[in-house]
Length: 462
Length: 65
Image 1 (cartoon, rainbow over the protein chains, first blue to last red):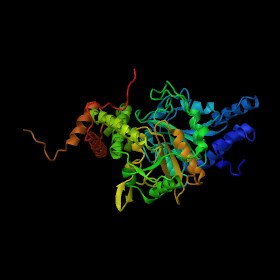
Image 2: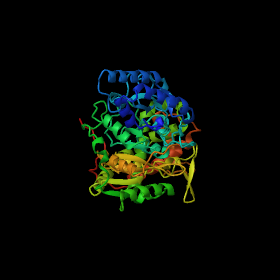
Image 3: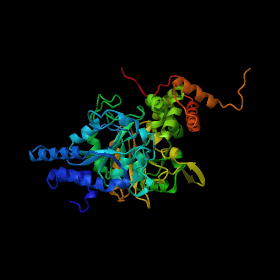
């Protein structure tokens, strides 16, 4: 057993539980104790499901004692962004309004799949209201705080997921990513995050935002943990119409195969503009480690970002139309005003954005005929201060919030799989996107693992 | 021929008309923010619209019966 229990990875916990070196209950109690001690400073958790977790852990331990094989995530405590249904809780999705919903009758599909693999749910995590956020701030529950500097943002909208994993409260968390909400907090908090291919992981039992663009995925402090969780969650699900009818394609067996032989490129043009020196430095470090010497241009990336913005505003507004009419004063005003503006976009322009999306996808897929991996910054800067509204770039004062996701939006717009890898910079870490062709999460994870092994990517201790 | 009064902003007219058509409340205090967001969204939408696509282009989501 490692000396520092908080540093234990999910894979190690599962190994120890399987070997009988610890129990699921002991690991659950340790996670609950860390949450009790550290959460007041981080505000990552909005609900702690302690009794449920203890019951689940006791069942796992009893099953093991009875000779049943423990799953690949045996005894691993995990938590989920509070837009995932948890049986018995109202799914608040970061809002005040949703708290009046009836309690969920069953868990979200991905919680069921992780628990079927032996993991133990310990609670729900803070998030930006209705996931329309890149900061991790929340007017109803308070901002989630960055474990590396609690005066700074976690990034959003999966802010609590970033804070809980980076802060060592849990080794594994789930979040959602519509325009960057996994990759941004992974970058600001200095942890690994996987946004799989659009349609890979079922979204059944989660509160939606933008059906065309919503993805779910895991956060962890090691690539192996990402792969373990991701493999356990794959597979079709008729409950989510967007979930692909593909059998699971496990990534763990080839995880250690390394990056050798893969064709690497750095995203040029749009992805080299508007970023701080630290973001540029992080991409350069990763490119050098991987021997990525040439650049590729994602054509019309800026327009892709614009189209993602339009689809998001329009579909988001459509989802919330009744709530905007009935309870406009119960929204975060910043979210409400964006949604109202989104409701007024002519349908003809939204359809154009969806047509452009297909064009852009075809162009980018062509790039993957000559490269396997594309590297890009995850965020233009390290975590800003909570409440910060602007940043200075090249001497020009710019609005911060709309610019946090400029490098993530053109990628999720066409559903490409991405592993955000953390680069240890002082004083704050920053992420780099390792992007692969659709359905090639295995390659992105292999490259992330090779960066981790080389010491280039690591989740630094707060 | 009717001409647009330069003091009247067509975007404000659009917000008023769209809010009425959708039965959306827009408190006067929210209006500047709604207007600013609408302006950004329309600018982005126009930048997409300006990109020429063939008539045969299909939207990205495909419904399968």
